[in-house]
Image (cartoon, rainbow, N blue to C red; front, side, top):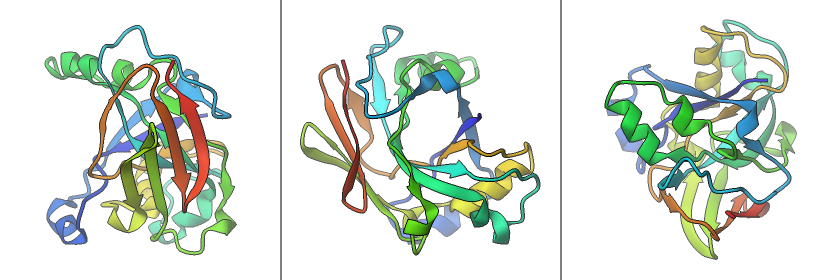
Length: 204
């Protein structure tokens, strides 16, 4: 199973998209060991003093595909969940100084908590899905897929030009442009899709 993500994929206003969208999608990976499921609490990583949260919709691939046409790409999505893409900002900064990879900053144990999945049939319009994150009861992030720079189909088609997508592969599809911040031990995170609470855990 592959766990992939796209960086900087949301805007605050749709009018911004035309000036930003140049086809250069920023794709990274996370190891399977970074996953936390079933709303289990997440252990704050000992390797970092500065971890940032990013709430994201996560799509699960349902069938194998390579060089997938954009107009067929949505048929490769089996399910959708909500997750947190954690980034160890201090580690990321350290490796950016030497133009190093993101792997350690994005791939520590617990860096990818995800909810249970909802079948794709439950979503009537992939371009209009609301999701949000509350921390300690306070709204921190709100997103809608209408504000994506690259939509689900564009992400899938792009990735599949480089690698075969297989059933069970997960793709973190980007975080809202506003509200990303630092997480701390003891924080209580609750993430929802269309108002339905699906992910509910604490940092310990």
